[in-house]
Image (cartoon, rainbow, N blue to C red; front, side, top):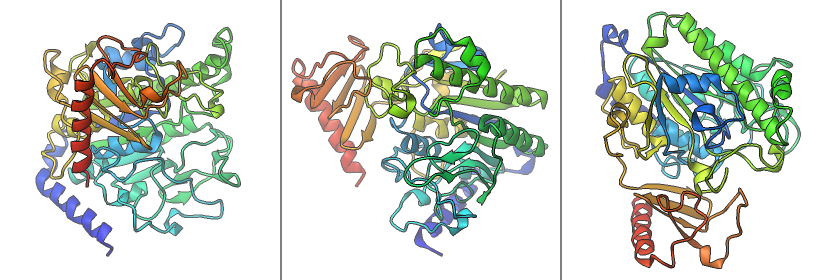
Amino acid sequence: MSQRRMTRVVLAVAVCLAVGTAWAEEQTRPNVIVILTDDQGSVDAGCYGADDLQTPAIDALAARGVRFTQFYSAAPVCSSSRAGLLTGRYPVRAGMAGNAAAPPAESVVSLEEVAGDAASTWGSQLTMAEVFRAAGYATAHIGKWHLHAHDGARPLDQGFDYSFGHMGGCIDNYSHVFYWNGPNRHDLWRNNTRVRETGMFFPDLMVREATQFMEQQGERPFFMYFAMNCPHYPYQGEAEWLETYADLPYPRDLYAAFLSTQDQRIGQLLANLKRLGLEDNTIVVFQSDHGHSTEERAHGGGGSAGPYRGAKFSLFEGGIRVPAIISWPGHLPEAEVRGQLAHGCDWLPTLVDLCDIGPLAHDVDGVSLRVVVLSDDAASPHQAVHWTFGKSWAVRRGEWKLLSKPNDTSNKAPLGDDDALFLSNLEWDITEMKNFAAAHPDVVAELTRVHDAWEASLR
């Protein structure tokens, strides 16, 4: 057994000992569904103020839950944000500082053929799925993975009993092909085996697989990670939605159609949950992985960050401030809003707390948001939060946020040499268009010290 696998076994045993619970108790525990959307803009839902979009399912979830207005993704890029959510650890600590590799070649029939990377630390991380499985939950990954497909890193290696979806960053939703970085390659898998359902719309396949998984569990509680491939490019909204948004400017029209197509599938998933009589005993978490894309493949944009500067790949607010909701009817407040600072790494300790399967037996960076969810008067549990992306980093403490070597993918204004250290004050200027560094060198020095101390702790 490799050292990495041995580490995972030891950690899993520790979780089992910490969580160890009788089967009778498991039956009373809530199910958990984590819905993660892909490249959804900071304000792109009706409940977040978008007046040109139809998102009834997301809005209904907010009406039956708690909606956050200062919620941050763990990173402004896909793989890193997912690693942070699933492990509760900053991506750089979880071994996923950037995006994961492309999916396997077309010739690979089973993911078990893909050799591991001995240098990778991602495969040794303890995930949300492993924590819930140790507590007696059935676990499923449905949708996008994008956390490597090699030995030790696949969904079935990371605590999931069942897996259906794609391993790479995105697919065509009908051919299920990943279409760059070399020859086109098909990328659809069930439990490590390639499956072909050409012509079937991938969001529909996700709802089908998720529903079947829920139907099969009986009285056993389940944890499901429902990671959507939309509204990430390619924008493939259905014809009815393209017609609905025909009067919107390009590329907002294409993005909007795909976002409403996504919302419909979320609605179908939640309707099936209700049909099965599980709605009131299921915690549903909703979050976008980071801000909207302005890449060429995304037609240069379409999504919106509202007043915020930045987009995907940026540590300005538009790249990392995301829509986030938690709902558990009859147990958590409904139709309430929380403005406290919260973070994608917080979901693991929060869900462990709410499901009473803790305490966690391993170190995480996230903090339980239970008291914040229950009370608008509770303070944020964070003194400071940190991000890294490439050669850039950012730290936020209170109203102040310091960015090093920032990148504005929204192209709202040029950045000069004087902006190498960019100090934002999110109470005075939510747009982050003004750099306060020259006026407040003492704050720059203090936040640099906070970042340096945090970076030293990673070694």
